[in-house]
Length: 149
Length: 260
Image 1 (spheres, rainbow over the protein chains, first blue to last red):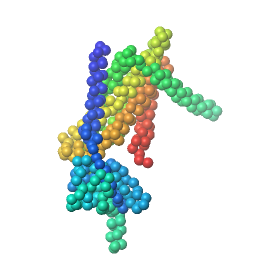
Image 2: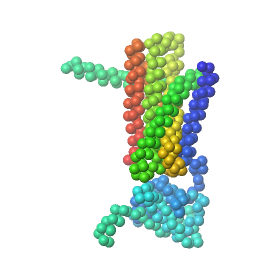
Image 3: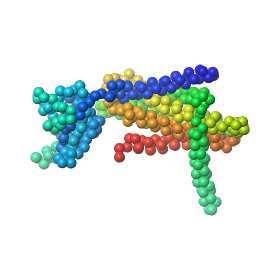
Image 4: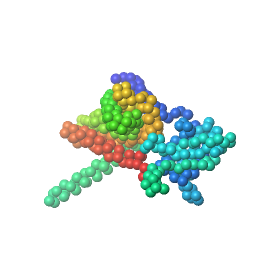
């Protein structure tokens, strides 16, 4: 076969590979081109984060508005300090809103749900949620129920 | 008794010696990087032989494996009423595991054996030594383009395999069994991460491509130059490549996905 034909076919082969990688990126892993979205940081302290993990979602009324960046232990209060990055366009979260850890479905992954407050002022970048509600621990719930407390 | 111990010792020495030879061989090949101008046409021809001609078997097996995954996944998941999770199941299995591994196994059988037989026959008919006589380095002229071609073609084939497999799974899950298309893609997109899943799969296939091509060209170059020697070298290529791919897959998976 002529060298040129071979080169063209190999070129098409490489293009097919790149196209396949693009399909995997956009269609399968849902990577959006505007992945580097501008975000700001909020904090929340929890007594118990349960099974919360970094990269988990933060939602508001069921709509994803950000993600969990890191979870660390505050050595003074012995609470878990969760760092969240919230999309920059959601800049009017009322200051008295509370962060609640919820589970999607009965056995699904855990995420943070922001339940809206009524304050006129909104949370600024770097602020910490005033009120939080820890993960529901099924085991503790059952043992409390069984011991009648 | 002593004879047996001696033969065991010889076996051990043989293995160590052949590992050493393959290492020196690899160093020799890699130091002879194909020159951009003269080496490029050779490389293109080898990518054609190794990659493009393997496309048919890769696409067909990808399609059927995806369809089987869809069918099996649906049967299992519908017991729990969560057949919409079929999308994420198919995508994760293909992208993380089956894409790189099955493609590497097919690649070893389809392309690796051909490489070994070709180089082995060149050695048996003394083409390699006549090249040396003419002052052409056979490592650079014959072996290096084949090694690089395997290295380049394998990830491309693996990515195509995954995409075709996911399409096959969608064909069965969505078109035939009636899983809702939105939840099929939605579940998939929320659980597959580009860097952690897709790129790790690509890294795996790069490693497998390198290992398969290395084993194939070394077995051809190192074979006993007789017809029996070529046939046993071809067999060894397929067996060693498959074992190496499966073993390395475990190691790579443990490093990439084992959270400990």
